[in-house]
Image 1 (cartoon, one colour):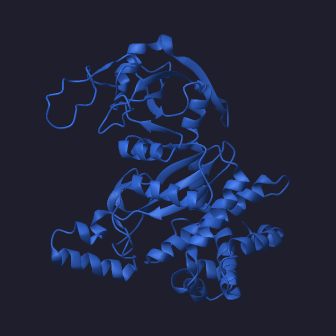
Image 2: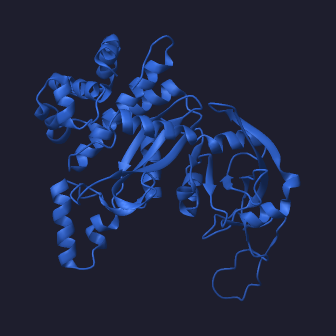
Image 3: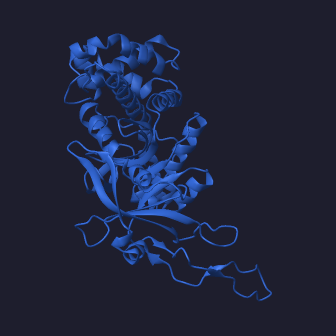
Length: 411
């Protein structure tokens, strides 16, 4: 925003900041928090601390001390932002995703050569896993965690000398001792659990194939009683709906054998091809910037297989709703999803939820280009999480202001 645009919203921003920083007992900390939000909202090429301080006309050490050294309850602030976002947006789904933060050097916490969707390739970067509240009209991150590759965990070091080197890197970044390498899907589940303790629950969990292909992730959602629809690759396997199981004869030793399927599971692509185009339905799921978004979809119910599948009491696999997009101009289906949503869920609703991930791409553009999500130049674990939390707060403020009619807001 330009200074005059932000001035119009000055009272609203102060009221919003007072709510966000209510857990901070010191008025000086609250003032610094408000200054940081102003710095993120004001126009500027870089949203790191020194450029923001120059635009605000204050000493940048004031912001640096607040982000990296001051003691304040980050978790309480994060919880308040998440609750406010859920209340304001009334989300139709929560989207799990991750994004890369390209970096030079190796001193920033969690930096490594790893795949980044931002770069579209393997590069030197940090990766943050996030949960977003989403509707077709608006969205806002609810929580975000920094992923630690195995190279940042002494438990995964090859020898004591390597472990000591990792320990020194962690000490310089002030990474807590209980933070180690965990797969991204596990970080996502931990955030869902944390959000539940804050009194928020997802209506539906949505994720791309990076998470959806992981049977442990899907099982964790089932164990928590959550509804979900996740993208998978065409190689994911399933049995036909009419496949039956048999129980091998008991040999008299050890546990009794469990029922097994007689047939070998097939890739989802083969199930869709077997159903054929005759099973496809044309679905319009939303209006885009130029026209309605429409394509053909095949939706079948099949028992999803894979590694260590979750079995029903009778030893059978639960049947999943599985929509597949098969555009009329393509010889093969292009996208696949699986879901535990009720069998009577209309296909249009399945498709709309499967496709609702598009909204977080708008998040990323605004969070990164306008609000400086990836501009943090500090090298501390706490500093990174505080910066992304305050960027989330700034994004929520813009979203709330934009939702009110006749209030011109541009980030």
